[in-house]
Length: 391
Figure: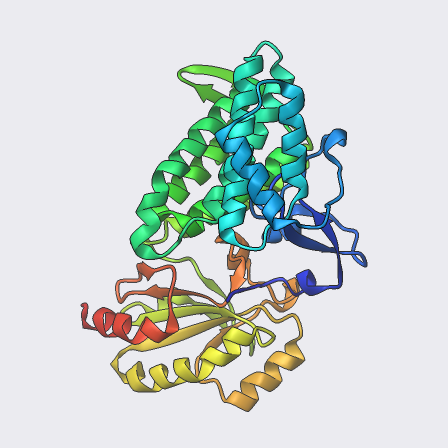
């Protein structure tokens, strides 16, 4: 389990309900009304989507699971032939909540089926209404990708759905010509799902695709370009920073990692000084349960392989330097700890690589190039043994 690295995300929150995905998804602090996307993006996924159309601001009805299954199956097997019936079924599906992935997948598939039927009925003559249903389709597809299996041997099976989603999004942007906050949330949810459910290559391609749209302010559809407007513009500027950081991280394999700053005791440090050694870069915090739980294993590995050229660099996210100092002393941590006193504990590299969760670990080889961007501590020893044998 991974925890967001921004402690403010754990403040008491009020719930909001997602109309498109149909699950309880996110909380936002009622004591902190700030809506800076740089923080709230860290909690957004494809499930954190809320339709901004007034006619879809409906409250959830109590979940009736047999009814959800029945409605979903009916929408898939016998889609209604008129828009009024489609709208009624879509509204009913969006009000329901499911208790397991199988029911949620059925809900997404049903929404897709209804949206596709609606688009076929109206064609593109009514462009605004067509785009409304197309957003339904895109959101459901993002939800299906989010619930897809992410184990290694199945990641390649998710590629077609990801490719289809990106292609459909391209067509959506081409027709819409203006993207709002709901579209922005959907973009961010899609890129996060691509990263967790697909290969890093596909995830990187998705980030590049959306970055190109944001920076060029246009979309290319089969050689035809159309300009795009963003509302609000500042939100998309912040999304640019997030996607750019994600893209850098996704492309780190085989590249040097840029990491420099001051140690906790004020000394200058640059990871380049460890060239010729195998380095584990560990983003962590004292308030992170998994980080604390993994420390004994990391300590054991450091003691076992340190003389062979193994180093650890801990990048602490702690804003409370007193707590950090007490923890370092208590555990007698023998390796370098970086902590940015002037930035609330956040090291600049967290934004540069868009580090969203702790612990996050990177393994760097003797040549200074990144070997792995995801490290599982129980499997780390095997990776270390291989890396230490390399010249």
